[in-house]
Structures are given as structure tokens and as C-alpha cells.
Image 1 (cartoon, rainbow, N blue to C red):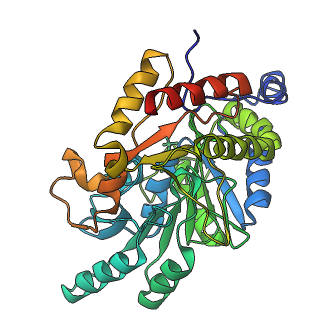
Image 2: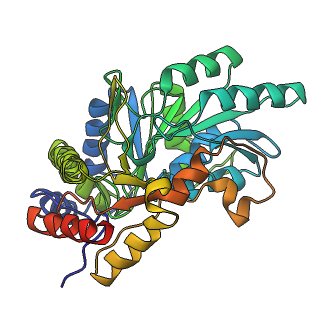
Length: 375
Ligand SMILES: *Cc1c(COP(=O)(O)O)cnc(C)c1O
């Protein structure tokens, strides 16, 4: 049996054409018509002032921090329940991540803990330099309370929307709220460019800085003149061709992912103790990955791992939820503000195969197998 992936690339019909255009016109470079077109599509889709395509989501976060002036010894308040790539760039800047646990409803940054952490830091004479929140698994974070705290204390917000392209909060696109939003087009995301990312913003000055820093910080002079340290972080016109085609099918991809979520939910509705992450009023999730929680009072401990191992034997990929960053050995020494939520999620949760290219037939097989293990 062929392997069933958690989330694999799903090409539409035009990607190859745009890549071929790049070859036939010799725009095989980190700029060109595909880059321009892809950036325009993102700008329009997200309703932002501009988008700059980059080599990865990680690079986008790195530049976001740089542009906000985050430097050595600065504190960045970062969601704990996320992929390590959200926080690695904080370390690239020689800054200090302080981890904030999640709330129950969206699994994202808890506004109550956020405010406590800000007050603590200010009391110690060190106001945090940035807030880095995540819309994990495509579920929008609680933007209203978080933005109100950020405004009150005048701390800029970076939105890690790597998993949330196509998610909306109060009809506004995830990634478009903060000072800076970042996206990822890695191979496992809802759309892909094989590898890539983008930085979006509503501030022209920020967008100009990104274009400058991501292309080696070249000054306008006939020779190479540099007054600042630059980065080689631009996206290739080849990759952008893939992204351009992918943007045309994004609405279909979101529909399919949401359909997959709905049918898991429907099929498991009769089983007591399986919980799904519901959309709060006003939130729209792209349902990048369907996640379930196994109630340990009903199933006992480690049901998630038992299901994962059993699926693996059938060549079906599933995965534990993100291991919170406050539990990661590499961030052991970092301060964190915890409430037990992300620890619980990691202990009991599982990501199920959610790729938009999964056929109904395969999906039914996955569902049937899970039902068999659980009953
Ligand atoms: C994928 C991902 C990133 C990193 O994006 P890359 O393009 O792989 O560098 C950052 N944050 C989150 C939450 C992600 O899922």
C-alpha cells in the first residue's frame, strides 16, 4: 500500500507552465515576473499593503525581528505551543525568548499570561521588544485581546501565519493584523513552493526594509556599497512560479481541508472522548491539519501514541501535536509562563492525515482504521 501522508504537496494545473515561462524567458533568478505576480496575489488575498516573498518562513521571522530592532539581550514573548522555527530566529538575533502558554479555546497564545509576562518584564526594567504569536494548525489566535494588550504596552506584534494562509479572524486575514505577518510555503503547508516564505505588512517602510535586507543590503551605487549587514533571503523566480499556480487553487485547497475535518468529526461523533478543535464565533480556520484529543479519563494515557503506532503499521502517517517549546531541551534555560494547557495538548493530541490530495477512498480507510483501534 502506498504511504498516506499527513500533508503533502498538491499541485494544480498552472504551476508547471509558470516555471516553464521562467526558463523560456531566462528569468532564472531571485527576481522576475513570477515573483512580482506571486507577491501581488498574496497582497490582494491578504488585503495588506504589500508582500515580499522570501526563501523560507524562518527567514521571514528572522527579518521581522531584525526590522523591529530586536537585538542582543532583548526579550521576545513567544507562543510556546508551536514549531521550533517560530523561536529559532529569536536566538539568531541573540535575543531571549520567553514562552507563553496557550488558552483552551484556540490553542494559541493566552492573553492573560501574555499580560502577566509583560508586567513582570517591565517591573524588572526590561520591556519586551516584540510579541510573536502563532495561528497554529490554521486556527486564528484571539487577536482582539492580544492586540489590545500590545497597543496598551506599545509592543509590536509579529504574526506567525505559516500554517494559516486562508484563515480569517472577524473577516480579516490571519497575517494582516500585526506590525508584520509571516507565511511559509514549505512542502507540508496548505500551498507550497517546495520551500519558501513571505513577509507581509501594512507599512511601506517595513516592506522597503525587507526588500533591502533580504537582497544583501545593497546601497544605490554603481559598485557594491554596504552600510549594513545583509541577507540572501529572496525567493527564486522558479519557486515563485509554483506559488503563482498554487494561489489560483488555494480556495479549493481550503475547501477540501475543511471537508476532511468535517468528515473526521462526523465519523467520530458517536465515539465518546474524542475532541476536536472548534472554531470560535468569528473565526474561520483553513483546517491545515485536523487534530484530535483523546480524553485520558476515557481512553487512559497514551492513546494518541497507540493510535499513531498502529496507523504507522498501515503506512499511514499521523503525528503528535507540537511539543511545546518550554519542554524542548534547546530552550531549557528559558523563562516561561505556563498554565498546563499545551502540556495537556501534547500529552493527548494527534494530527491526522489532512492533505487536500487525499482521496475519499483513502480517507475512509484511515477513518475505518482509527475506529477499529479505538473500539
Ligand atoms: C512551517 C512553520 C514555520 C517555518 O516555515 P519554513 O518555511 O519551514 O521555514 C514557522 N512557524 C510555523 C508555525 C510553521 O509551521
